Image 1 (cartoon, helix red, strand yellow):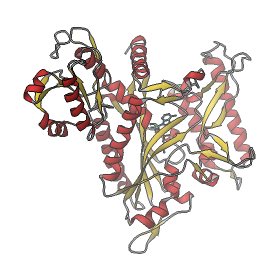
Image 2 (cartoon, helix red, strand yellow):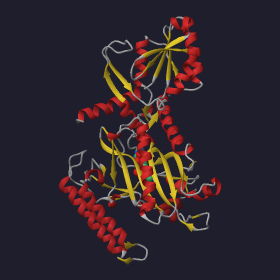
Image 3 (cartoon, rainbow, N blue to C red):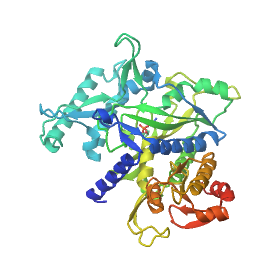
Image 4 (tube, rainbow, N blue to C red):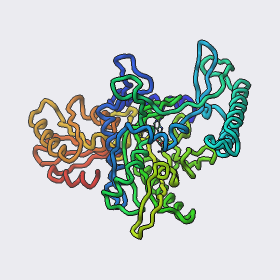
Length: 491
Ligand code: GAP
């Protein structure tokens, strides 16, 4: 896709989201707060539908899963032991121009070869040095070596990369920047620093014993959780793609201690398949998804293998979801274990499918968005460009819209209202009587309503209505008494 087309598509989606009440810029009446977004009446329905479908598919419909809703704020020891305090950071570099001070993430500028060279060199130092016992390399020598690598990075930047804001090549030495957001609890400022969770996963790990003791689940089993996570991202942006506050839908799937690689790989492959099925169920085409095995030197500190599921966003191919083999890293570091029915005590290993809610919303909207020049459209509406969100019915904010043909005919309005109130008990429906029916169709196409019902004078005679399908625009007459069954089969 050309740059202008990419921008056009993102502009079309952001403007539709604002105009129709899906997503608003955060704190708008006070001039906004960059990279924060509020979900409006339709956006919250879409988001909730995604979360409900995920919960049903991966928690309530499976025998080997349970759910959890843990705290956002946790004891700081959680983050010490999970490795997030020491490792959960991005490298950033800052433009030294006094008027600029633009900060960027190093990994977003360097070529893959450069990145892997620097990451590989630094990882090697971290794996060979023990900073506590000072063997086999002393911490001091290690830090000197890291400083040399930082200088090499700075020189490369000053030689090769201009600042995108001011155009200068005047970069600082790189620094690590921890991504966890801090706050303090209690009345005295700074008396008790705590962190907002940067992943929902740790809430699951630290409740492992509670869940085993109360749920009677035996390995292998998983715990699913949906909730907010916070990261002080250096470069948020691309609408809702990267924000500092977002939601995750995560599963920690606990398996017995593997004796061979095949033991964990089997579970990993099963979850890989499940993730593809989930993506398909969202209406995202499989050729828009690409798997990327994360190179060893770029793996998160807890992972032995990670596959990123990348989606072709208009601004590039980027991570939608991740699937990681976290080994026994987390439970071991939290001092937790498991005793099987034979009395064997061991630390379970973990496969983790991790999904972002907002990235799902964005990918779903991008996949569903279409502009069609409809010519002689089957629903008889005059030719013009039709904007339509071809959302899977399960995800659509409204499933059905009910229209009286004319709003000034009380008998039509009364019949339409009765149908609306009856169907509303089962599905989220909209009642729309403003403008002509063609305009109402187009309004509902744009927000993805899969079915529109029109109540006309024949309805009063024959007890049937016109049901119009969003995607085919075809219309059929259905008896009012059959509507419940008709939609139960379709939605
Ligand atoms: N527990 C593992 C974990 O958190 P991650 O790859 O850092 O792994 C998982 O995050 C998913 O969370 C990503 O694939 C993405 O969908 C979502 N995500 C991560 N950071 C995000 C951000 N700043 N804004 C929106 N979504 C984000």
